[in-house]
Image (cartoon, rainbow, N blue to C red):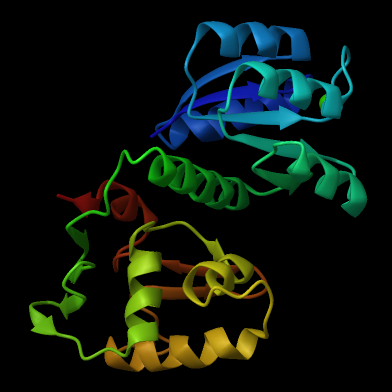
Amino acid sequence: MASVLVVEDDQFVRSALIRHLTEAAHTVRSVGTALEALREVAHFRFDVVILDLGLPDLDGSEALKMLRGITDVPVIIATARDDESEIVRLLNDGADDYLTKPFSVEHLSARMAAVLRRSRASAGEAPPPRVIQVGGLSIDPLRRQAELDGAPLDLTRREFDLLTFLAGRPGVVVPRKELLAEVWQLSYGDDQTIDVHLSWLRRKLGETAARPRYLHTLRGVGVKLEPPGGSRSGHQQGHQR
Ligand code: CA
C-alpha cells in the first residue's frame, strides 16, 4: 500500500495503470505533463513516482532532473525506448529503477515493491516483520526459523533466505534477476543456481514443480510464492507483526 503518482500522457496507459494500482490497494494520483508532476510532488507526499519519459512538455531527463531538484521520492522510469545508454544515464541522474514498455502489472508490482523496500529501509521506517505468515508457512527472519503447518523446516542458509524473500511479497512474481541480486547478491548468474535451490526448497516443503503448492515458477518470468488456494488469499495474508 503506497501513495503513487503516475505521470503519463497516454490516456489508455494511464487509466490502465490507475486501475491496476488501485486494485492493488495503492492510492493513486495522476497527471499528464512534467510541469503538473512538479506541482504534485511540491504539494503532496508520494511513496513512489512512475514517470513516463515521452511527455508532451519536457524531455524525460529534464523532468527527472527537475523532480530531483525538489524531492528525493523514489522514481521509476517508464520508457518505450529500450536504449541502454539512456537508461544508464537516467539511473545516474537519480532514477531508482526503470520499466520498458509494454510492461506487465506483475513486473510493475515487483519493481515497486523493490523500490519501496529500499526507500523504507533507508528511511529506517519499516523494520523487518517479526514473523511472516503465508498460509501454513511461518517464518521468523530474526531467529531464522521456519515452520510449515507447525512442523519446523530444516533449511540451509540460502533456502531460508530464498523462502523469506519470496514469502515477504506473497503473490508477487519476482523476476529471476531480482532473486539473484537480492538473495545471492549477484548482478548476473545462470538460472540453474535458482532452479537447483528452488527444487531443494520444494522438496522440503513437500511439493514438486509439477504439483506446486506454495512455490510457482512462471517460465521465462520469475517465481512467486502464494498460499495454496491462489493469489486472492495471498494478498490478504502476508505480514503479521
Ligand atoms: Ca508518453
